[in-house]
Image (cartoon, rainbow, N blue to C red):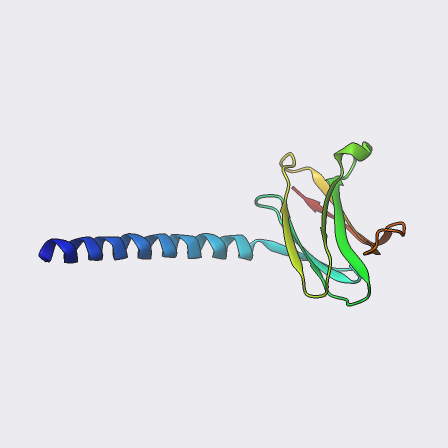
Amino acid sequence: MKRMRHRTIARATVALGAAAGLALTAGVGLAQAQSLPGFFHGTVSWYRNGDTVVIKDTKADGWAFGVWVSEDNDPDPDHIRKCITSGVGREKACSFDFREGVPVRIRAYGHKKNGESTPVVWGAYTVKA
């Protein structure tokens, strides 16, 4: 019986330590978010540590909300990465891998959910990777 108590306490201690580590890690990541102003129909946050963009559709308007993300001076359209979400209140996180310190261009766009219309650019911002 004493042995079982020792194992239970040991497991609880390990679980508590793991939870505390996870909470500290999550807190550091959230503290590094950069909310980007000037976007219409949605919100965009950039996490430099991990090159992650978090987008949220904020309008019930029949348009999907997304971003194109690329190195600022890269003219090659094949290097553009996309992150899209559709539906008011829906949020999505997309991680990319850019070279450290390069300017990264984030352009928000929208398109009709049926996909028939050409994307419309709703705002742009440059951040550092």
